[in-house]
Length: 237
Image: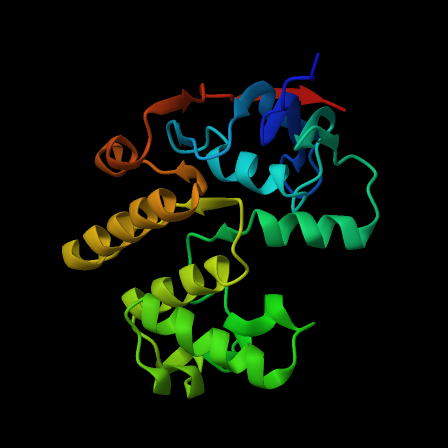
């Protein structure tokens, strides 16, 4: 009998804590931000992550991709535990599950043009093919070809968010993790972002994790929601 296919992503009892010093000469305390978070995400499924400010929504997204170290628990990608994997495996994981960061301008290297940043996940391709793919994904995200020659400082907030989404989608990922994807954007751009993610999900079976305080965005994109509790747990070292 065939074994059932594992979930695309499994998070098991994930725990993250930060060391904080109270005052200049104060005692070191540990703040537990995530304490035993678990969920499964199937291919083509969407999950919203919500909670109050400081509940660890962004930390959870970053910990999944190993941008933040975790003290306990496991992250399994297609049944494969990512703990202790070599750096090339981690980079491959992040290409298959890229993150759209909350601050789109800050997420772009100010020294790189838009075209270079968007095409960075495709460095293994010949330059002509990579340039064609960049132009195609920019057009798909409603941006003109000349946008590829601009630098991040020359972009509006809405343009920068479209650029970061283009960079996430260019490698045909299985999952996109979005941290406040519509924060500080005008209503038209918000609706465009939501529509683009839904269209891509219908076309390719893309899975989504949406981190947001905006319940309207979560309800539009995610049938399932994970509510994070307020942590506020401090302990002395």
